[in-house]
Image (tube, rainbow, N blue to C red; front, side):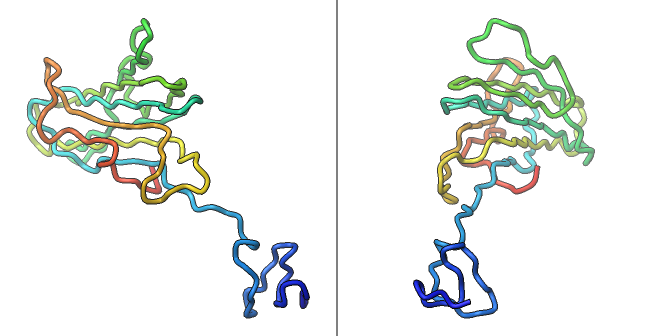
Length: 186
């Protein structure tokens, strides 16, 4: 069907494009789908410092609306990929841990402008073989339209540290927000 208003083999007014024809219709009229920025993050496998006794993950909801996150801390000791037990604390709340030692991925909705702190505990700290772990976080996608695939405006900022028994971050076990690797799958 020839459309006289755009002089092409398409129906520009109904956003239909015949892909087997050469067209001079503007692409912007045909597709309004924006690319999505992956909102899944991984540290990759981290070699645990021998003094690291707790993995701390902080998640700051900097947006004006609640944001739901999933936090998984995997112990790669002996290649087992077992979920570490976790406790979570919402900053500013006087309550005890929200998840007392659960060895499953933590799913939590962080209120607007609040900080969630997750403590994960490696189970076999004393075993020397392959003391690796990985932090995985599924966060809400970039709410800005169109999203910037290079420097997204993430609504949740995440960081992780490995700390010793007196709370001192251990060398090699710190990963800051921009150092997390974006991935499609979690």
